[in-house]
Length: 462
Image (cartoon, rainbow, N blue to C red; front, side):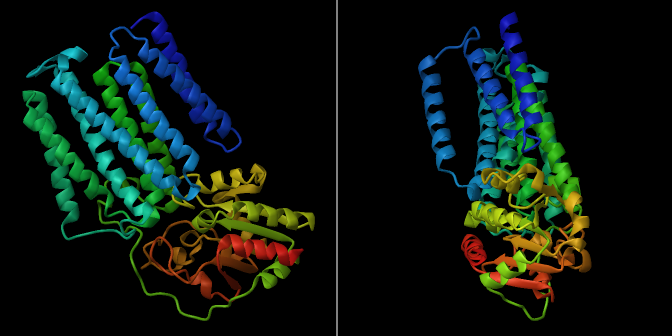
C-alpha cells in the first residue's frame, strides 16, 4: 500500500473515531454523522484507487444498486421501523463477511494468502472467525428483525436442553475451526458456515422482547468483529480498525444497557445461557380497579401542576406523537410549569430511540434526562405523564420476584402525586406482562391513540 493510501486510511479512521465521539450525545450527533460520512467517502475512494482494482463496471453497478436501495430506505423508513431496519443492515454486514471469506477461500492466490488446499494458517484462522461471526450475525439479525417486526413472537422460544445443545454446538464449531486450520478442507469451511447459521438462530430465539434493544446493540458488535476478521483476510488496515471500533463500541453499549436492565452481559450474549430468567414470560396479572379519564381531566391536572415529568415509550413512536408532545410541553412552560423528559436506557426498541424522536421534534437537550438523573425527583413531581411506555415503568420490577423483569431498574413514576398514563388498551407490554401501575390509586388512564390524546389535551388547554 502506498504512503498516500495509508495516510488517507488514517484520516478516515480518525473521522470514524470522531463520528463515534459525536454520536455519544444528541447535541453533537449531527456533527458525528458528518464525520462518519466523510470518513466513509474517503475510505471508498481510496480503496477504489488502490493498485489491482478492476472490474469497474461491476463495482459501479454494485455501488449504484446499493446506494439506490440505501437512499430509498433512508427517505421512506418510519422511525417506528428503524430498529428492525438496523437489524436488517446488521444481517447484510454478516452475510458480506461470509461471502468475502468464501471468495478468499476459493481463490486464495488473489488475496496473497496461498493456494487452494494450502492456505496460510493465520489466514485460515482469520477467515474462519470472520465466517463464523458473520454467519451468526446474519441469521441472528434476521430473527431479531422478525421479533421487532412482529413476524415472530416477542416471547422467548425455549425448549428442553436448549443450553446444553447450544454449548455442544459451540464446542463443535471450535473443533471445526481447528480442523479447517489444519486441513484447508472445503468440507470443514462449509460445515462452519452451516453450523454458524444455525447457532445464530438458537442464540437469539430464547431472548425475550424486552431485551431486544440489547440484542440490536449486541448484533452491532458482532457485525463489527466479523468485518474486523475479514479485514485481516483482505489485508485492509482500515477495515480492521473500523471493525474493531464498531465491535468494541457495540460491546460497551451492550454492557451499559445490560446494567440498565440488570441483566447479565454474558447471559444475553450467549442467548440466555446460564439459566437466568429472560424477559417475556408470563405471571399472575395484577388485580384492582382502573381509573379512566378524559383529555379535559388531563388538561386540568397538567395546568394546575408545578412540575411535570414526561416519560416517552415505544407507543409514542408508533403514534408519531413527539411533535404534539413538544407542543403540549410548550403550552405548559408558558404557564410556568417545570417540564422535563425522563429517558430509560431501553425505552423503545433500540438504543437512543427516544432521544432521536425527541430531537426530531426539537425538544431542548437540557430538558431530556436519563434515568439516574431524574429518578430521585419523581417523589417531588406533581404529574408523571407516561406516553406509550410500559415495561420501563412497571413496579413489578421491584416488588415481584416472580416477574420476568424483576431486578430491572425502572423509572419510579409511581412516586409522583399523579400519573397520567396514555395507552391504547390494557394490553401487556413487549415483555408480555401487565403493568400493576395501571391499578394504583394515583394513576389515571387515558385510553386512545397517543397523538390524538395529546392533541385533545392541547385543545382542552386552549
